[in-house]
Length: 114
Length: 116
Image (cartoon, rainbow over all chains, first blue to last red; front, side, top):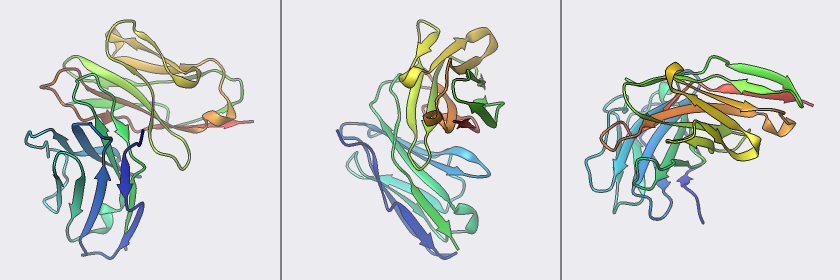
């Protein structure tokens, strides 16, 4: 079946602009995660959605970052007033609801802030 | 707080050599353990995982890992590497209970380069 998809695959923006990154999880997966991968910081957790529960936002680096998940499926990560340090690959993962379930990753969105 | 340490940052091997990549974790509870691989230009893929039971776990492409609880370790092994194993390898951990941290905590990664 289809895996996790993300769009766009690449995004170049100017400092100070807002960006939106999209994630389509695997159908039927109730858990959705956002991570980012950068040279200096490695792979870092950003935010986690599980069903209708309140999201775990503990990984968001600043209040410029927000995410929503509509209808328990598609998720959008928004970065406001982008900074150069936001340049990274943003990864989305989804999994079924069980505690032993594997997270399946999408191809990522490479964000470059000029 | 959870943390994962991968001590080897860059490993260069010749084909047919044996591989062992170290992974140690810190967490005050029961954990699930994972090794993910990222081939050049591709996305993260699961190599193998440990949840419970036999501490020696076998994954895809001939990889295996051993969970040693007393050492908080989950080292990845392969008896004979191939050029196609050139990739970056990430060890990761999350809580094994629904009330614990579900997000993965990753190690910094090990870049493996296999020379033909």
